[in-house]
Amino acid sequence: MQLMAELVRKENLKPDIYKFSVKAEEIVKIAKPGQFLNIRVNNEVEPLLRRPISIYNLDKENGILEFIFQVKGRGTKILAQRTIGEKIDILGPLGYGSFKFNEYKNIAIIGGGIGVFPLYELAKQAKENGKNVNIYLGFRNKDLVTLEDKFEEVSDNLIITTDDGSYKEKGFAIDWLKKDKNIDCIYACGPLPMLRAVREYAIENDIPCQISLEERMACGLGVCLGCAIKTAKSPKEAPEYWHVCKAGPVFEAKDVEI
Image 1: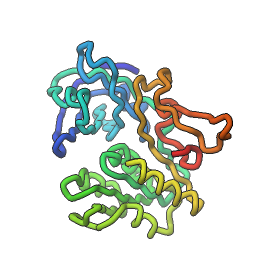
Image 2 (image 1 turned 45 degrees about the vertical axis):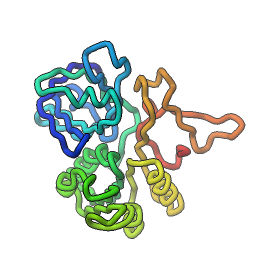
Image 3 (image 1 turned 120 degrees about the vertical axis):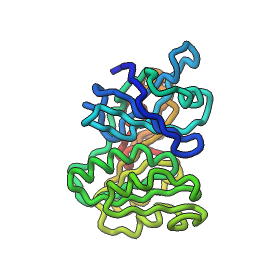
Image 4 (image 1 turned 30 degrees about the horizontal axis):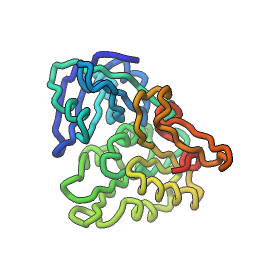
């Protein structure tokens, strides 16, 4: 659905990383962990294309929708300048593929960098439903560690890693994930090299794994065909493709080639 959502709270979490809280009861009622929004960054003609941004948190009691984004280009720079009280044009929730956790008891959630944001709502709902939630988050250095306190609230076991060892554990999040031998399913979002490593580990060890993918999405509805991804079992002579915005953004890791 498309609606004009009032910006009720704005936080600058880190340099160039913002959390927006908007009043969007209609979306909050039906959104699922892993889905995303397509946001018009201002109310002018330019820039024309919306920006796809993952859902961070759903406050169902108050009808508040929260999303976090990093300023990377012209569009997100304009969005970051929006002020409290303004109305933001939002299309959502989008994406058929969402995180599913009901059949599992001991779950592992792994994220890297800004890819940790879509994982919070998953962790929160899994915890509320009595799951054993193990979270592994990796960042390049101490200055980039984000939302540690929020993930601490929704986890049974939280591991923070930094590439350079400037905070908590040194190394990569997947190194710590591999030490946990009681995992029923893995959920991942983050940089492509991390997702490839997680996918490979899950397949080799026959562990169910769901990954959230990010591609350039001009429309967010499967119309422009710009976010195609090859299916894992498609023949080389006639490759088959899904579209991340429509079939995903969450996929079974074994079903896609990344």
